[in-house]
Length: 83
Image (cartoon, rainbow, N blue to C red; front, side, top):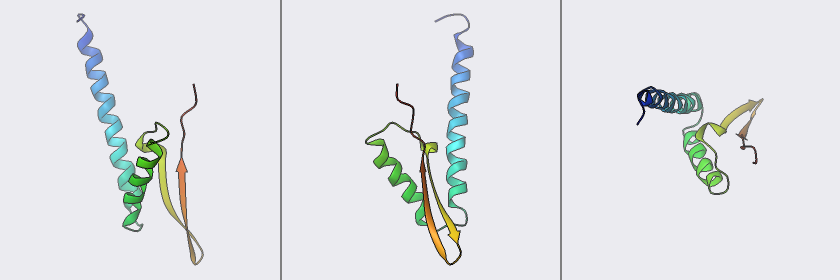
């Protein structure tokens, strides 16, 4: 272990905490004003997508959009670039 390795360890911990906070905020925003099943639907879609593609929780967005008398389920998945 190098003399300054403790600095990178703190940076990694801070980035992990920041990522977790983003996930929590995204879930809170998705749950406001919408049906109760939307957060559960988003989690289940994420699980299914992860069977085929490695994506993070922020990559899947599920929203209910009002279009006059109709509601439209908008599902957006940001896929990673192929390498």
